[in-house]
Image 1 (tube, helix red, strand yellow):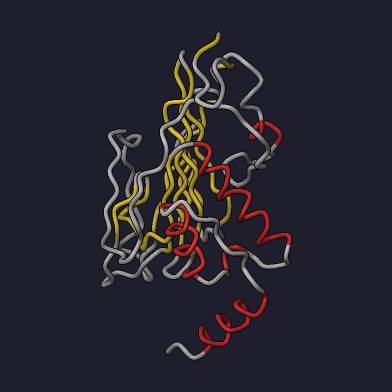
Image 2: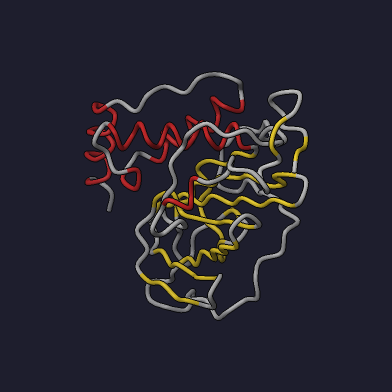
Amino acid sequence: MFGLSGTAPFGPSGTGSSDYREPKSCAKPWNCCTSGPLNFPNKESYGFLLTTRRLCTDDSSAPPAAVPNTRSGNPPLTDVTLVWQEGVREDWLRFGKPVAERIVDRRTRIESYAPGHVFALVRWAANDYGTVRSTLYIVCAVGRSEGYTTVPQVDPGGELLLSVRGWPRVRRVLALIDAVEAAGTDPCDTAPDYWRHIHNRLAAGLPPRAYAPGRHRVWLGRRKLRP
């Protein structure tokens, strides 16, 4: 099936072609993704700047059936619901270090994160006419008394460090995450301000700067001084 590609006069719709095949090569597609060139119809990301953690996102898609969360635990955990229905709805975590996992059914799983842990959630969906949703969120899990931003499929939410919509920008962020890893830094340990920097630069139509080793050393030193 063919439809408008958004990047050329005509192109594959992304549902009946070989355009969207990257997650299939992953043993655990909800945890990894390569970032090669793709061609999808998408709207561009919203052009807001991230300045505070109270910035809210909106998504009309309802999450899967709720299951009891782990907010009452000690410490409270942030639950991320992932749904994998190949070619229709594909959610995965580009990076993250969950402390717990639960299988809900053959398509749905929940991963839980302790306060302070950072993860990247990618949400993709398509119909017969092409891609209808491509989003990427980088979120820091928060404690019980901390403020948070609501994020789709994240219960209760978290400190939103980066949010992009539209596959061109999602692909750009995936490439930047690849670059961080290629430089020898774990994205989970990267300075949160760097993800905010990427978000704001993309929102302003400017190229993000690379994550320098010196910046990472400063961040690690500052983190050690935290109480």
